Amino acid sequence: MKLTLGEIVVLFEELNGRLLNRETGERSKGVLSHKLSIRAKYLLNTELNKAVADELKSYEEARLEIFKELGKQEGESYVVAPENQEELIKKIQELETIEKNIAVPKLDVAELFNIETDDYFPVLLEKVLGKEKIEAPIVDIEEVK
Image (tube, rainbow, N blue to C red; front, top):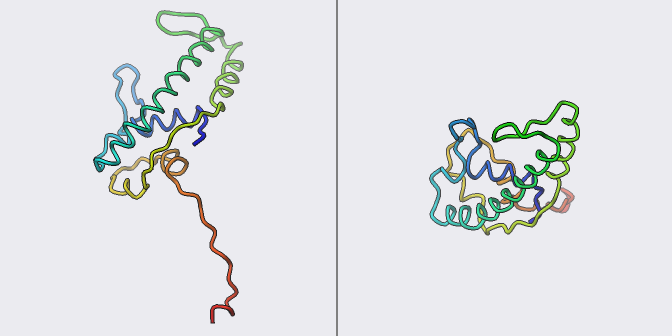
């Protein structure tokens, strides 16, 4: 399946949780931290999460190169001057539109219905595991009678 790097970043957060606090490393609960069937956990973690993590690593490396190009190193991070902010945003948005092929495991979205959460996982549920919509034929009511 083709996903943009931006979607891959979101999918990684959906699987592993969103970073809530950079200093402590605290994350929200991702799909993988919920109680899942052995089959679902294996497919999501071993097949999908590994592929997503590899692409995320490449994305983060490319993103760091953009910061190095436009910013100045201060300690362990890079600071981008206000006059370069627009260029930074443009380059990161361009990076996030690059499409990558991700192997999607054969997992029925119904296997995730037992998860109790207030979170919503749009890339995972709609794009990755969502099925193509099948159009029902339009039948004249008179034909049914």
